[in-house]
Length: 242
Image 1 (cartoon, rainbow, N blue to C red):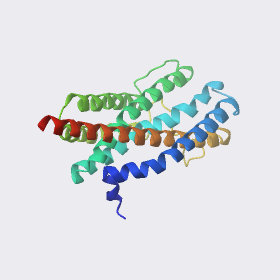
Image 2 (image 1 turned 90 degrees about the vertical axis):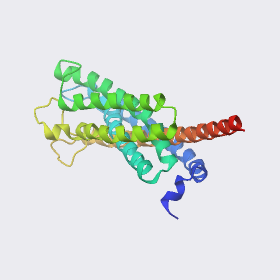
Image 3 (image 1 turned 90 degrees about the horizontal axis):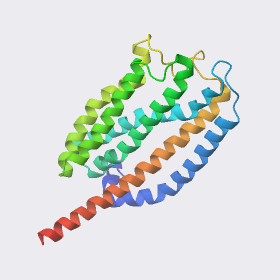
Image 4 (image 1 turned 45 degrees about the horizontal axis):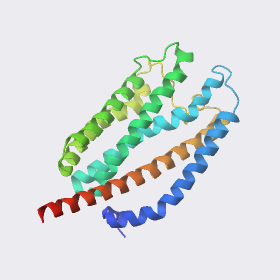
């Protein structure tokens, strides 16, 4: 069976009927275990104290903020090339989740950064590119709302998504490009000198899995809602024509 068959709304709905209960259960389990483990059963850092525990919110939300945009890029390209409506609706459904994760990452980063840098905000390359990504998310959502014709809205938002992907890429690799930035290196790294201690590593992995499952659950629910809304709009349009 080809993966493109799931671009059919009916097959997508049937598949997600099966996936959603498991994704929801996994979200509750992994998020609860990861956050409780991280916030209540890990030691304070010798430099940052208890402030370091915000890592269990900041890192997963920051990772999702970037990767949700890349997911939108892929589904937008599928729309532009294959004209599958489910892919365009999935990108539209993911955007509010992505902007929320970006906002959480910016807020938790400010709270985490103030004790370390002495300020809640600095025009660090990664922070600046993250702020620009946040603006692109808002622009993407606003563009969908401003255009009445759904296919035209999908075309224009797909182009915007391609342009915004430059800033999503910069958000991920800004520290590698500009070493003078205040922002620390990656918390999860192959380099043992940058990698977080094992006491934080394992609950962080569990938290990340929980956040990913949370995103999958929400994006499937929102895509299903978008499909139903499209069906209702089509039925209403037929009634008006009839």
